[in-house]
Structure formats: C-alpha cells, structure tokens
Length: 82
Image (cartoon, helix red, strand yellow):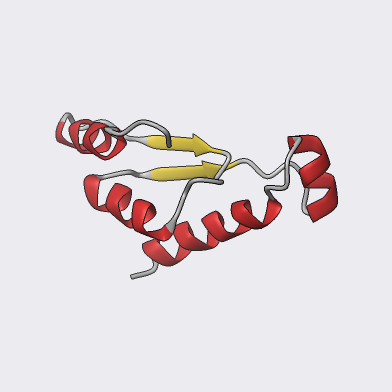
C-alpha cells in the first residue's frame, strides 16, 4: 500500500493476463484506494486480522489497528458489490 505505483502495477498485471492479489494489514486501505485498485484490475484482497477480538488483535499486531482493518474489509467488500 505504500507504493505510489500500485494502481499501475495492477493495471499492468491485468493487461498481461495475470491474476493479482494484494495481501495487506489493511490500515492504509481506504475506500478510494480500493476502488482505484479494483478499476485497475485487482482481483483479490486479503486483509490480515490477527484476532476477532479488538484488544487481542491490537496486542498481537503491536498497535491499535483492529478498527482500521475492519473498515478496510468493509471498504473492499462494498467496492465489489457495485
């Protein structure tokens, strides 16, 4: 998610006939970014959630990230349902 050219990489993968998959912690995966990646041809997203319990997830992850991860999953899900 830190790459400035991620959308372009997804588009190039699509153009080459490749299947693209993004594995992310989800903390930087905002709705606008999800939609841009989908439009560019991203096929699959996996968001790493360490536990369904917010406190446990945050302890394992080493930071308060549970809510961001859930928001990212919702963002991805809603961008695919259109």
